[in-house]
Amino acid sequence: MATERIMTASELPGDDAAGPVGVPGGGGSLRPQTFGEYVGQRELLEKLSIAVRAARERSEPMEHLLLHGPPGLGKTTLAHVAGAEMGRKVYTTSGPALSRGTDLVGALTRLEQGDILFIDEIHRLPISVEEFIYPAMEDFRIDVPVDSGLHARTVQITLKPFTLIGATTRAGLVSAPLRSRFGITHHLQYYGQADLETIVARSAGLLAVEVKDKAAVPLIAARSRGTPRIANRLLRRVRDYAQVRGGKKGGGAITLALVEEALALEGIDPMGLDELDRRYLRTIGTTYQGGPVGVEAVAATLNEDAGTLESVVEPYLLQIGFVARMRRGRMLTAQGAAHVGGGSRAGEGLADGGLFDGDK
Image 1: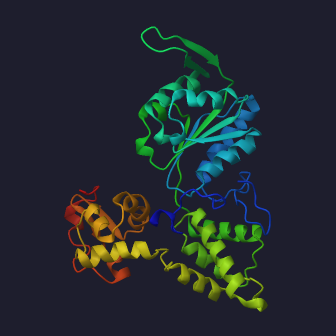
Image 2: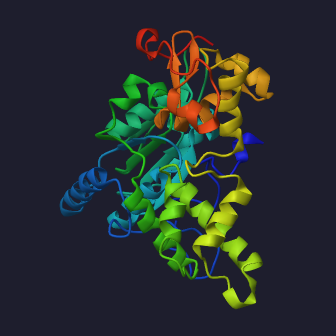
Image 3: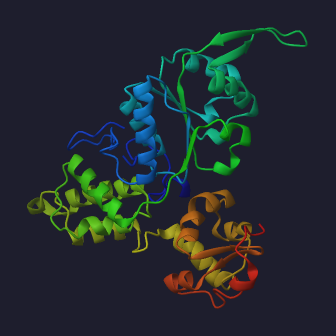
């Protein structure tokens, strides 16, 4: 399925940007454990290091933290790094797993002073759970109903001061009352080439992968779509290819030629696009003469789900300027048309069409 393709930065065990440091030669997680090991997001790291140091000096929990941005950039990793730097435990759950306010009681009551509760995809919390968590965040207490109806009774439970870290890929869906209760809010940016090269080189060392050609690391980084999790996945695929196809003399070492062969086998082109991305661009460029066209029409032509195209395919194509969202739908830009060689009207009307979310 498209949502499980190699270029999708969805959450899968062991593919993260960086949990505990992996054992050399093993297939475990590559997460850093400290601020010093974490690569990139320098502005956020500076904010967090100051907040953590101040909280430790005052013997208080760190302020509640909201992280938002595309998947695969290290939101979960930062939560665990903050816990390690604070010397406290991190308890993890997710918005979809919390259907009722009482689902949080067990998690909140077991937290010790300064512990961290990490809620992934926090924008998917039901309203009832949000209202339940407000007093926990502000006053470190929860009101548990023990009855129902007009004369329902509640029992107030006092909590030990803790830190809530929320992560979301859809910041606009986080309600204003919930967002306002976070003391620190930060948007994670896509990574630059230099940071990705550092991450690939570090991961290669942790995985005990020998890199013979220095140019192999920049090539993997360049095709990682600015996302560390994808960079680590590509490195693993190249490692497997080098081990099987590199021959006994190669000993599984990575060379530039092997990287190019491995990425070609995966269908990853020099811009980091895979076959689904290229089919999407070709459909707009040839079937719909460059657009504008609604996403539903493109999805029907590709026999894909429209939600998959919006959440998996379009974000990166919009970021690199291959597609534009307009009032009347999606339009292929001149750069996008040149990449796939199609679109007789690509780029026309962008000036007067307006770059707004298109009609579907």
